Every structure is written in C-alpha cells, then in structure tokens.
Image (cartoon, rainbow, N blue to C red):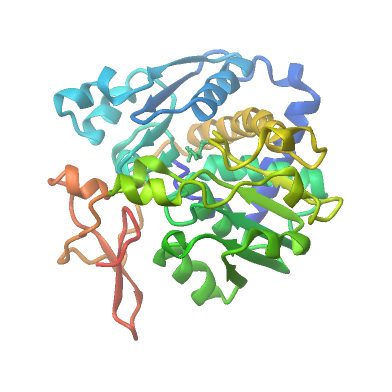
Length: 360
Ligand code: NCD
C-alpha cells in the first residue's frame, strides 16, 4: 500500500501523470463525479486548517465519496491521551483513506506504519507538506508551461515553513532550477533540506536577505507567512514577523511574467493591493488544491485496491541505539515509539531521525 509522506514518495514520471490527471479532472469534472461513490475519506486534523482540510473534503465529495473526521485535537481522543497509532487503527475500520495534519513532526509517518488504509501527510509540524507542493507544482506548470529552467525565490520563514521544505525537495529534481532563498538570518532553511538538496545533490542556490535585490531575477516568487505557532520565544516572532512585505512598489521590480504564489493563509506579508496584479496567483493556487487532491485520492485508492498489503517503512540499515532530541518530533510525546535512525553520511558520521529528519 502506498502512502504520501513527502513529495519524494512520488517519482517524477508519477508526478507528471498525477498533474495530468488533475488537469483532466479540472476540464472534465463530470467524468470523475462517481469514481469514489462507495468510499470514505477521514480527515484527522490535530492542527488548524482551512484550505487543506476543506479542499480534501471538497475533493472527496466531488468524486462522489463521503467524509468524516475531526478538525482539532481537542475534539478527538488525543485529548484523552490516545496515541496516533491507536487512532489510525480505529479510523482504518471506518474509512478507506485518510489525510492527517499534526503539530508533531513524523506523526503521519507513525500512522502509515500501522495503517490498513493509505495515509496522506497533510502537514507535520515544521517538516513537510507534500499535498501543498502538488498544488504548487500544478500552479507553476499551468502558469509557466514547465517545471524546469526556472528561477524560484522563496521568501519569509524558510526555517519553519513546511511548504517551503517540500517544494524545494520536489523542484530540485527538475533541470536548471535556481533557488533564491530570501529570509532573515534566523529563519534560514533547516539542516535537513540544506543537506538533502543543496549539499548532497549540488542544486544551485543563493541565500539573500533583500527581497528587492532578488525580485528582477525571479520567474516564480513563493511568499510565506512567518510561522508564529512554531516559535519557542514569542518576542522572537514579534521581532521577525514583518521581515518582508510584498507591495505594489516591489512588484514593479519583477519580470512582467513572474508569478506570485503563497500557500495561504496570508497575514501581512502580501499587501492586499497586490491581489489585483495579474501576476498574483495565490487564489488560483488554492483552487488547484482541490483538483490535485482529487487526483491524489484516486491514485492512492487505486493502488490500495491493487496492492492492499501493509507496507512498513524500509528498515534496511536502520539504527535503534540513538535518541532524537528534537522537541517537535513525535517521539518526544509518544515515548513508546521505537527510536529509528538512518546514517545519511558515513564519512561525517551523520545520523538522522527517520520521523523528523533532524540529526541525532
Ligand atoms: C500552510 C501550512 O499549513 O503549512 N497552509 C496551507 O496548508 N495552505 C502554510 C501556512 O500555514 O503558513
């Protein structure tokens, strides 16, 4: 059985097929209106969401299926201390597929390890958000006509922004991609992305702090919100929250065909006046989320029907004798979980937690 934890769980050809399916769904919605008539999607959201949860639910309804679930940890048995693994074992009895959002990094992976139904990571802490990335790719492909040969600026909270991590990993597999990483010093991309993408694969990137300076080069500008809920120190958030504001003056510095993306919600990092600029694509992006999630639900249900056997993670070479110290890792709150590490660099003796990808 296939699950979706990271965009890298899909090969590039699979991704292309999925994008094509989403485009076909958009053009011919009637063709797909009863493809999930007897199916149920569970949305298990332990963290706030508007777009992701509602677009998953709308996606399943548009396929003729039904939805059930919860939209906050307080209204689930997590409030009574139930583990993620027990919750998914129970949910597997009531639903055919599930989308899970959780504040702890690696929680959906824990679910996928015991689940009898496909699990989709709908955002785990500051780690990954693969379905937002599918949406971003569909939007970029439809606006630019390609996913290669692009200069992509990512601006704002690159440290805690899970959408940024997943998008960088996904885009790094296409040819001639240049990343321009625009952030304050304190919010630069985390070590696991720096390692996975930039050091290991030699993908081209520059790090700058000025949005104005980066603007003229960009084909795509991906703005992000400073992730208040992930800061340990609220004053640090106050100090950094207005680091970047995209306004009509800055838009004058950009190429005529650049496009502005944002996973939303926006706080004040994009002035509302920019919404009228034809290059602003973030609301169109939100609509694409529904088509993309329809395509993903269809693919994972189809694969589950053809290969229903439970698939644990690949345990070859895993190490069990270390402890993850990332306070945001699921192993910190669910202490009975086995500690699992993978050596990612023998020469430098680097071992990363399988759940959250932080170094031991
Ligand atoms: C993003 C998320 O939840 O990570 N939102 C979304 O899913 N569209 C971005 C954010 O919250 O800033």
